Length: 290
Image (cartoon, rainbow, N blue to C red; front, side, top):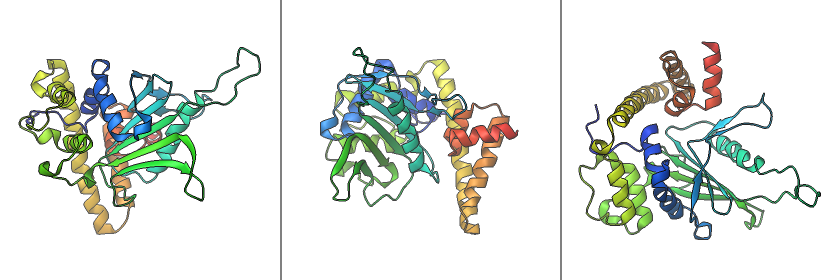
């Protein structure tokens, strides 16, 4: 099935292969240092569980694509969102509450209790769609007051609208440009472009080459790729239907129907959410009705 030399980074397997493996965490560190403000540079990371439970068992839980902690105890959520979601901003805000709440401690050695001092939290969203935040595609969002002064510098949301990046190969001028270019085009390369001479990019091409994967990983990738392509086809159909009807409900209804089909085929809830564009919570509610 896989005809491309390099795997698609927008599949679940491809995203985790590129950014989620302990042996290759230098790739994630390099990417984060490229998109984060200079003052937030990362030197080391530890991968943490991507499933975060609420304080109460009856509450919802969150499942992140990647969740990491740096050497200073600061938290990083890295998410790949493949389709527009009506309450996408709400979702990223909601996700940020989990690494904030988990920092609460039961007490201090002096017996005076926790002083509410927090480590920084970053939510990085790679978006394979246009969110129309502004004409830019790279957004760093912070809490500010009415005078546009930073009120709190320990909570940042970084949004990357990948389809808005339109530079050609000859227009790439820095490391950041190269990262966005490779994310948008990795699957289309027949060979690693000659201008990718940095060690980190050579490693990216090395680990994402399909024939370099072991047989089990090749099969896992091909399964994910099929789901991803089917999802794109149904999304195109739903988009066209939505245009004809002039209603957003068309896409939503189609996404729900797609989710039902995938659930009935035995696909995990998290993957159904990944490829339907619905939230994990929405998919879980659909699963309860089947």
